[in-house]
Image (cartoon, rainbow, N blue to C red; front, side, top):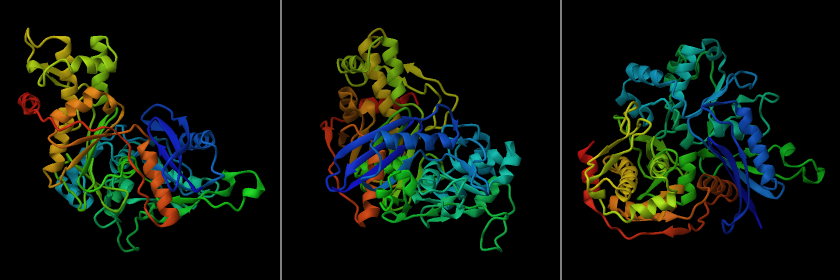
Length: 483
């Protein structure tokens, strides 16, 4: 039996999933927590990865591995391979002003044309500008910039402060596309934008490199090999010294999930986690000058236009707390109310909102009457509000020419029967709910198998629910009326 491993180094934790190459069956798993916060010392990720590998039974019998990771995080390295400061994560918003400054200097349409996206505080480029302005001494030391999955892949290969070969850094186009200094349509870095962010001279006369030079990770194509795992990490037993574990390109988390779900053109993934995401696999790049849709790349060589919302599963947490019920009871209550919640509408911008871009917004209940103000309608209004916000994201994606033939509804909240049933009433597209799983790690494992064999595996996707289309226009019409 040939085994492959997929890693999901997410914001909260590191998961390792070991699968059978032929069937995709999960054989072993491991997990370790990450520190909380919006900035983290990358060494903590490395410690968690090693613990998770041990928890999964080690790599002695594994033939290939790949790392999926949280997008956008800024890992700045000096010339000796040392991390200059704790990494700023995607959810660190201190670079919001830097994003506005860069848009003012370059222009939103120009950014969309050159990189596929308009930068927001999440993106790496804005964090580098923040570093240049807030910590200029640290910015002056930057010799290489990596993303979380890039840095972990580099460490797995045996590089780091004791072996600082910065030119050995690798990434893939999906993760690079979230930096705002990479064009996924040409697979090239925009060094002018990088230099602008770091406030460094832009001199094209020396092989297009920045002066002083900043190393960016080499793009490894889908199915290619990035390197091999450092033998010292595999076993202390000399008998295993010759064992070779191939490392694949890795991916950003959403691209990894799309690969793990087997999403193809015509599929749209709607993920209901702490935040919400709506992303589609497309054959052609999408470039949105409004900044609503980010024109990312996927992990298979195609593209991944994406919309993100700040408010998702926590909407249900809040309403369940208000009604003093658990999530199952919340769903049961909601299903006793009629579609449209008797006119009650919950606009759930509980923590502001990113799509639409309303950072200071708050949540609001509309349409309350003596008839609509009851527990079932409030429960249903929360679920309808959650799904209508994501439906607005789907509209933004499809307005750019993306076709949606099937919706893959993922995340813990998707397993609530009320959520999937009401989704079939909110979206006028067939809804499928895959079995719960670590789909980022699954996508990474597919990459590992691809790099090992040269062929992308086609593992089956288990489905837990497939509610019939039951489109009820009143739900979206009421929601749109209060926007």
